[in-house]
Amino acid sequence: MKDFVFSNTNKRYHTLDYYYKEKFHSKVFKISLNAGFSCPNLDGTVGFGGCIYCSKTGSGEFAGCKEDSLKQQFDNIKKIMLKKWPSGKFIGYFQARTNTYADVNILKKLYETVLSFDNVIGLNIATRPDSISEECLDYLTELNKKTYLTIELGLQTTNEKTAKLINRCHTLECFESMVKKLRERNIDVVVHIINGLPYETKEDMLNTVKYLNTLDIQGIKIHMLSILKDTPLEKLYQQKKFKVLNKEEYIDIVIEQLELLRPEIVIHRITGDPKVEDLIEPNWLIKKFCVLNDIDKEMVRRQSYQGKKANKKD
Image 1: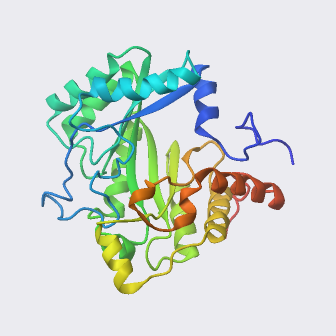
Image 2: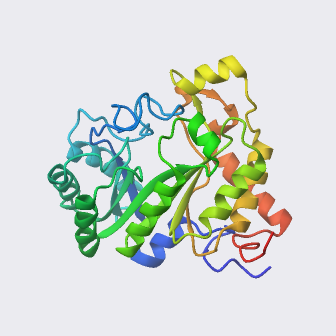
């Protein structure tokens, strides 16, 4: 097989590292931040309790401590990264909870504080498609003209039955509408999906990617479902013992998903790395690099690559 065009390594998919190096001609790091946001799915605006898999940190396990200033959080991680790559550049990643869920004046202060730090070249903002107001969209449009901006939207699945089970509290229609609004403003969109959600089939997981492949998105994060301590998902698992994907099943599904995705879509993440002390299942997620290596090996064995089936009809 001819080498995959969006790669400068042995990877057969479009890695984020490759994308950043091509765009910025430098090593680029995302620094995860916790700005103390809440979520409309917690406070009753759209729901209570949050998505059933969310930890107490709101999917911000590796973000900073919200009691620390953004500068403290940023510098703590920056020091570690600069030891390996002294000339690296940075993207501020607002990760924990819903990072557009506040008055626009508050958002401006938080975002522009991070943009003022040395060698910060952009922002990634994780949020929900039902939590970006028209006023916020206008501000993001202006911000996008000044810096490299990416909005990360949680979809997780296109199966609406599963969406109700996980308490997602927004519709597929709402998600698609927000993707279109962001792209009309030329703002890059990255979508989060989760493999292994309770009772989903392989076909469900492939259908989610088939749907995303029809949208104007620039990136995707593929996660394996983590069952974490002290979450509603843990209670459901203890009660129902629903099937959890094993490593081989996960690898098989991810490779087929990659084959369906257009090659220009950047793969921001291809597995999860939950905190070991919080993880109930699956234990194989602890060895993240083993999972990544096994995906690479299996893609070579199958002569597979991202986009192999992107233009093929069912």
